[in-house]
Amino acid sequence: MMASTTSATAAAAAFGATATTAKPRGSSSALCSRVTAGGRRRSGVVRCDAGVEAQAQAVAKAASIAALEQFKISADRESLTLRLSSNPPPRWYMKERSSIAVIGLSVHTAPVEMREKLAVAEELWPRAIQELTGLNHIEEAAVLSTCNRMEIYVVALSWNRGIREVVDWMSKKSGIPASELREHLFMLRDSDATRHLFEVSAGLDSLVLGEGQILAQVKQVVRSGQNSGGLGKNIDRMFKDAITAGKRVRCETNISSGAVSVSSAAVELALMKLPKTEALSARMLLIGAGKMGKLVIKHLIAKGCKKVVVVNRSVERVDAIREEMKDIEIVYRPLSDMYEAAAEADVVFTSTASETPLFTKEHTETLPPISDTMGGFRLFVDISVPRNVSACVSEVGSARVYNVDDLKEVVEANKEDRLRKAMEAQTIITQELKRFEAWRDSLETVPTIKKLRSYADRIRASELEKCLQKIGEDNLNKKMRRAIEELSTGIVNKLLHGPLQHLRCDGSDSRTLDETLENMHALNRMFSLDTEKAIIEQKIKAKVEKTQN
Image 1 (tube, one colour):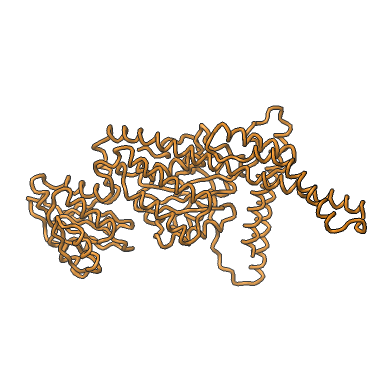
Image 2 (cartoon, rainbow, N blue to C red):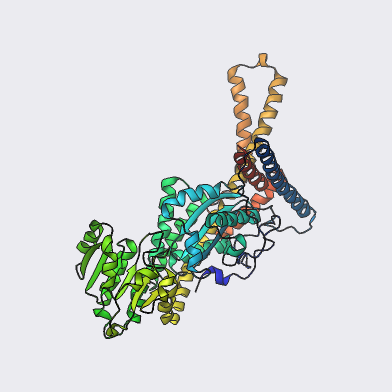
């Protein structure tokens, strides 16, 4: 498994403590791990007394203001320490900066029972993003929720506080206590978070190496964000670069050869469990004709199967698949015939969006037995999350149940080739990661450019006013006044031209970028611009005020 979660070695320190100074992106020590400590759930008390409600609002307001003051005090303390230091860090000397983070769980860290409680349907992604960005220390957010993972990507104004807020949100949404969630969560920061998303998009973190469906799901996050206007600048760019990385990996390596999707792995697993001599003659049933179901049919064709029965709510979708796939006989059955169709099947694939199980122990016990030539067991291959086949079905002696977690068995067959392809893919991912990091670093100079120009304009306006007062309004006509104003503006522009030129960088050249950032820090010190602290403080203050209103 090439996931970033396995490569991360350092714990997210002092999770329940106050915010600490952010380390630079790309630090050699991965700022990630499972969450291991503290964090409190918000109380959901219903207020029925006006006086109590007013008191609660006052307490909440005081807490928000206290949080903001704590941020200011910690930043000022760090600033003083750095000024007194004889050797301050040349590049990353500034206060806490906003961080890109991913908090989530996947098939590698959590069982399907937990993942299905946290799953967010695609149509609810915009609402989830709205709720997350409404948290005090979260500026941008995106949700990637699939059958194998539920990951939240954020830009956090404060690392510790932002992570705590997201974990509390996940706990509240799922009903799972935060302490239990932390046993399965992984957290990655900045370049580690970005690399993880690139690996996910490339299929390196999937159960089946190079799985193509996850790239389509990453694309859908961007598409959904564009339609709702929910993705921020950093998250939007990161997901788009992840798509580029995923496309390059698939085009430039052979990572897509073999089983490359959950659906193809499901077909391989089913055929692996059937007697080899009878596998292709087994009676196949597919429940659900959505994207995943369509891929199941595609891979059944690839394996040589000639017939499949499809149960679906509507016949139109099945007809469309039948029109597209001519190499297999597709028999449609309505949803009302599902149990009758299951009684006639040796293998049942389930792939629907049902929130409740379609098959329970009671349903399965009424199904007729399977012939010994087919192994004597009816196979249920459930690739849905939430699951379509209840876990208790496995208690029926004539049934065998497999879900997405069981697909690992299919993947184990090709470890050496998997590792080689993954190493090739990592080279591409590193290139795309550097490109994204350079772009993000280049954004840092924008606040300094604005602050420096604003600072110079204030001085120009003040000195111009003094000059005009000394000359006297009666001694100036409009033409003379305009000439003096243009003179002052021209002087400022020419003086600023050099410094501003050294602050502009497109991020494509790492050497130039380092020099640009050093110039930025120098100007911040010389003119006391203090841009980063001011920006983060301003953003937190705006969120606190929005919450109070």
